Image (cartoon, rainbow, N blue to C red; front, side, top):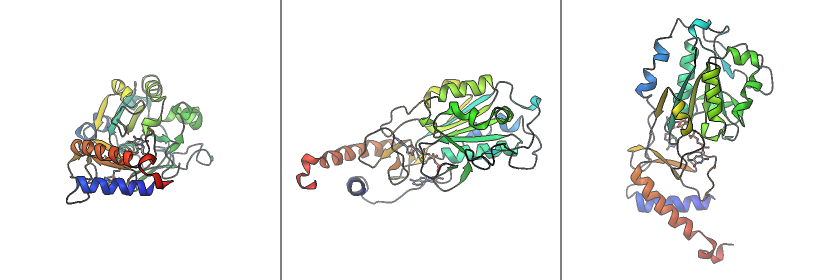
Length: 284
Ligand SMILES: Nc1ncnc2c1ncn2[C@@H]1O[C@H](COP(=O)(O)OP(=O)(O)O)[C@@H](O)[C@H]1O
Ligand SMILES: Cc1cn([C@H]2C[C@H](O)[C@@H](COP(=O)(O)O)O2)c(=O)[nH]c1=O
């Protein structure tokens, strides 16, 4: 697979980058819908000291230490959301979705709310006990195969006290819609969802777009095109694999603008054709 990637990289660079240069996104800026969220201002109150909640699960092997963060005591009911909220953060890889999610959760902790982060256990890139950004910022989390197991994992008492639930890698949760609906509409939770809106072929990925009609706010973040530095809306897969799910980082994917997505797909298709065994009789 490494040789495939280097062939693809070479092909793309020779065709697409007469003057190759690499671009990295600056630290992502939160868009106004999140920065100026009434959630953070209208219900803000003097922050109790930041602390790890005394979760009954802190010593349990199934719950990472500190996966529930926030106030020791839940906020009084009057200061909690009566009907819950759903906020969705979308975009390609490297757009800063996880960064924005962690910041949002930290803001909620600073406002005295009790928060918990969840990610899919399919994403094993950095272990299962933390959500980690591409530049290494971490927050403890629960890694689950399905969101329906969250309440059991946490326990009813802890779930009832929880104000905010963050969900990273939301594209991997098939029960995202039902979970968000129940958590916000029925249980009064604030749910912040971060995930890919599209896969490497720009098809809708998992159920992320299905929760848009449920959402109070939707923020689409952009990355920086690795080829030209313009805004990147899409994720290009550099590897030869064609299945929808392929866990990976910068070794397998790059953020690209529209032009370089189109050019890149042409090169990748040509490269995949060249790599087929019938073109390489001696390669077996
Ligand atoms: N092409 C890239 N390759 C590796 N890291 C990148 C690239 N572009 C941006 N980054 C880094 O990734 C960070 C965003 O990471 P993260 O929040 O995990 O994004 P996302 O969750 O949207 O994939 C940026 O602040 C930047 O430091
Ligand atoms: C485009 C695309 C991505 N994936 C995988 C690759 C990563 O493991 C995650 C996305 O992580 P990030 O936090 O948004 O950087 O999804 C995939 O399986 N299939 C795809 O098409």
